[in-house]
Amino acid sequence: MIVFAAIVPHSPLLLPTIGKEHREKLAKTLASVQEIEQALYLAKPDVLCIISPHGVRYPDAFSINLASKYVGSLKAFGDFSTTVEAKSDYLSIDRLQRKLRVEGVPFTLTSSEDIDYGFAVPLLLLTTHLTAWKLIPVSPSMLGGKEHYDFGRQLKRVLHAEEDRVAVIASADLSHKLGPESPAGPSEQGPAFDRAVQDAIAKNDPKPLLALDASVTEESAQCGYRPIMTLLGSLENMSVTPKLLSYEAPFGVGYLTARYDIS
Image (tube, rainbow, N blue to C red; front, side, top):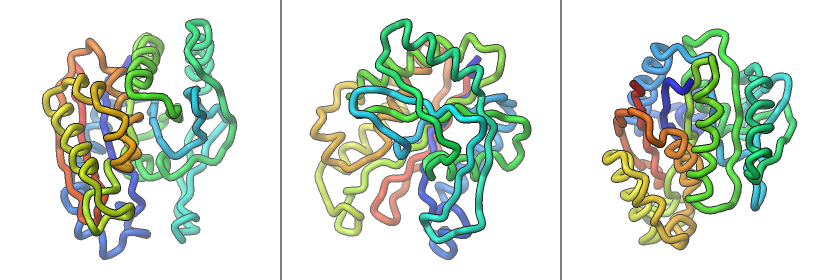
């Protein structure tokens, strides 16, 4: 059953080996991530279902990476020593893929032991005290918000019926177009997108995000919309208390952290 949910950024700058002195500018995010790590530990999950936008993506199909184990590294960012390993929850993945295909959901499996930093960074930040957990690595498609919300609902139907305790985590950075200092330059749609996400989470209402025009989600140069919509779909009709913990953008990219307590 689903016992916990959260939204966390995946910037490698959050890790001491990469961020170094720049982490001082991410104090709010780091404090929020620490709170999520503690709450996640208290939720005692057996399984982490993480949705990352940086894995293998298909234009019209959702996917899950099925391998015997997973290894994430930070080699792409110059850190050749830090790694994280995870066991696969291959039985739950098998049940998911069978159910999704029977119901006609556009879905496929990939297979690789390597997982991208969208998985590795949250795992390094959130599993400090967890033991004996397994991973379900989910990748969104290029379809729209409603399709991802519906996909989240389908995930819930399987995950919430599992005997294992499941935490669903959206690995998500927000707009990369917040101002002149942003990596992708400024755009009016950047701040508009980030405000819409914060408002939807604070009000526990996905409708404003579902109604966002595609020009806003794409022109804002975000990488979190689809993981967040998948997470929100997985929480539909559940008794949840959202807590928007922090939002900051010291480097021109929106970093939002939020947790959902489930009763």
